[in-house]
Image 1 (tube, one colour):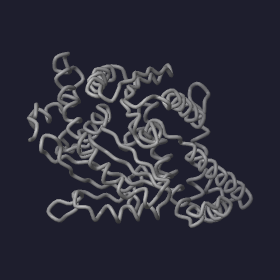
Image 2 (tube, rainbow, N blue to C red):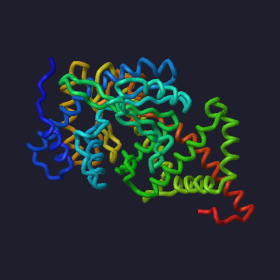
Image 3 (cartoon, rainbow, N blue to C red):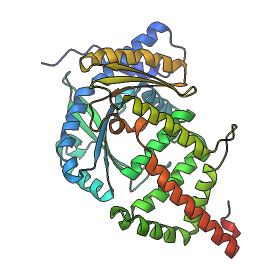
Image 4 (cartoon, rainbow, N blue to C red):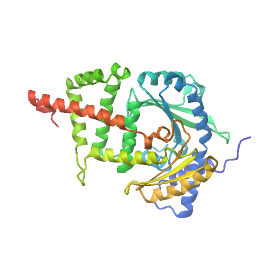
Length: 387
């Protein structure tokens, strides 16, 4: 027998509208967050079912894959609704947000990604009236900011007897490293590059890097893990193409720009990673349960609060209370993370805790290409490529 729903669809939509208001009184804010907490939690059971489906296949295809699951944070929901409002997308209601519950599969390379996609698209949960519910191939057609991935929408029944959507993303490790690096920049600079909303120089940088990374992982030597031949092939391909060499030079020059404190973009990014890694090391050995994380991005301070598995409702309520603070103070980041997901916190919540070393590694290769290209430019006096 299904549980009785505490809030109607109309109340959920109103809560989504209220989330965008800046002058909510205390009682209205409390009610809004209570409705949002219910709406998110109504996706927990479908999320678990989607996870079980993925576990049937992914490790048979790629033993080195990892799986991440999450419920969308209030701030992320608000950003998505606010972006839709700015773009005048009137149909974007809270009830229409398709990725409240999300799962991400990160695999070694493009070949394994395509194999997993092929298997999953035979499952009925991705179809409605014999048609795919929603399928986006951002590998063949990247987003304007360079984002690459496969998105599939599935539906599963929750404890209220309602079908709820769960978004499944398929990424390669290199695509994932790019995406998590972008989110780290969003986190610390208070931009929303993920939704193509931010400083144009950052948007250009990530778009250009994504293009270079697609060339790198498209090589047969990337799949063979032959770094020497991969480097040789990549440099040869880039240095004979004026557009690609221009991208490399722009990427290198942007990384070397200094802020008001004399720190380069690249140094700031490395410092951001170090802070997040210190958070990660603090909770890696935490017992099974949930950790409420409060990160002050200005001070670099981190507070952690642990909850046992049976204290999940208490944890979500505390999380909702702290998100009130986030609405008032943009210097705080709040996250509730599970410690029992596959591979621990680092792999379960890669948006915050993923090691972006892979991203930095290939930025180094792109910078080498830029330096070689510039040497060639001076030698041949082809000044039109100089930024």
